[in-house]
Image (cartoon, rainbow, N blue to C red; front, top):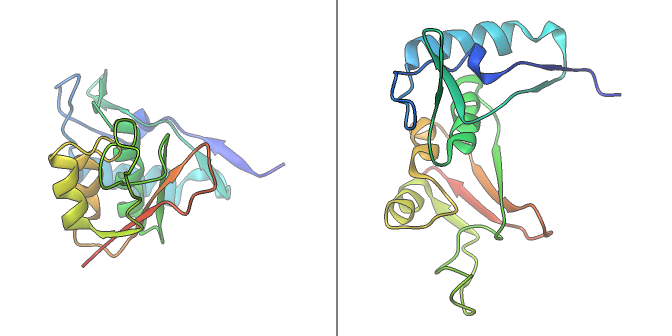
Length: 158
């Protein structure tokens, strides 16, 4: 019995009309997150929300690949979260693809800048847009495995 409320992300994520790869309208999104999640929430300790989707006028849009993780970093950056946790089917960022390289090694700590470079060069566990809202913050991003007790990877500011 944890006191909670459900608020769909379409109530606070505003985008352009690029359906499959929508760009965030930051001014409106930040204001709506503060209004709906920070000031609203009916005093609940836990707010459950969707990821991956936003809204342009009356149309539902999608944020594209990694959109749910991106949603988490958007919300976390606006509310000043002490950390953001995303889950994957691998233990975190690895030195190579663990599905094809049995010698892949877990990277336990990495900077935003280096993680961004890895994601742009093909690391599928982390979508580069997930890191965009965290630039200029000191919010660590934890990448953990849904199916194991691994310590995962922490992505941190310089």
